[in-house]
Amino acid sequence: MDEEQSRIRGYLVAQGAKLTPAAIVEKVQQAMADLKAAAAAVPAARFGERPAPEEWSGNEVMAHVVAADLYFAGSIVSVLDGGPPLPRSDGRRIIEDAPTRSAEVWYRLLAEQRGALFAKVLATDPAASPDARIDHPMFGPLTWRETLLFTRLHDLDHAGQLQKIATALAASPPA
Image 1 (cartoon, rainbow, N blue to C red):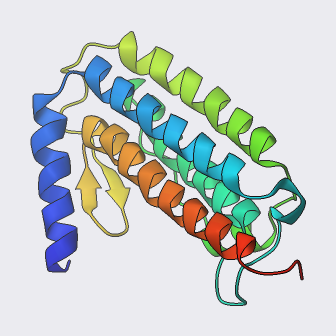
Image 2: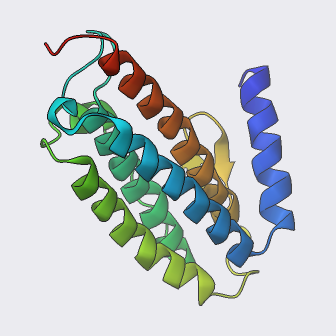
């Protein structure tokens, strides 16, 4: 883990312990609004277009966000139900094989997944499953509260990526 990853992990651990689950949910919802706005800023007709060959399209970014959320949200729900975290999948394959959808459809899928997650989290004792850990490939094992807070950072990171995509596509002719 490099210095930046250690700093982020420290934030997740400290704030995950400090904030109530309701406060974390509120922060995630705010980040979701940023993600939705950033995805909507990518021209709809070019949502599947990569701004450069080595970069993701808006469609690929949102496919990644939804796929990652399946793992993280699904693992949180499983842990809160007394089960193990979900197994991780090959994220590259999911992105490469992602169906072409609009920003609105991708966001609706994410909102539906998160709605179920938020309902579960808000109905659960905040001290539930304190020893359960959900593996993160960059930040190591996280509690369910830390994992929930991570989804906020993940959404914000990809909102920034979508904003860059929108700017790049606005400055170039369609492919």
